[in-house]
Length: 76
Image 1 (cartoon, rainbow, N blue to C red):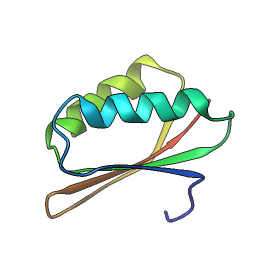
Image 2: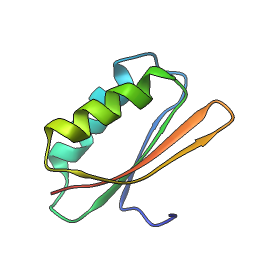
Image 3: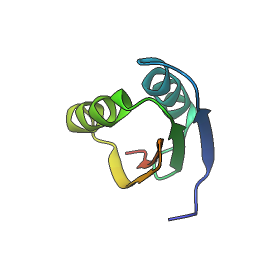
Image 4: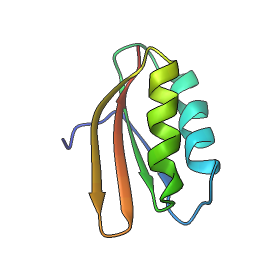
């Protein structure tokens, strides 16, 4: 997936900053828009899975490449 409306680059940020930055951006977005999040913290995998499970947002795709984690989240 390469289409997104917003980008949060949290590369180099430790837990919980990638998730907090994503939540702040999602709060500003309209329903249906897509957020791309880039993180390098392995803990983000657990954090984003838990977050998606507790919200109505949809995780469209999760990509792991080397030590980079990319998430595409659709706001609901």
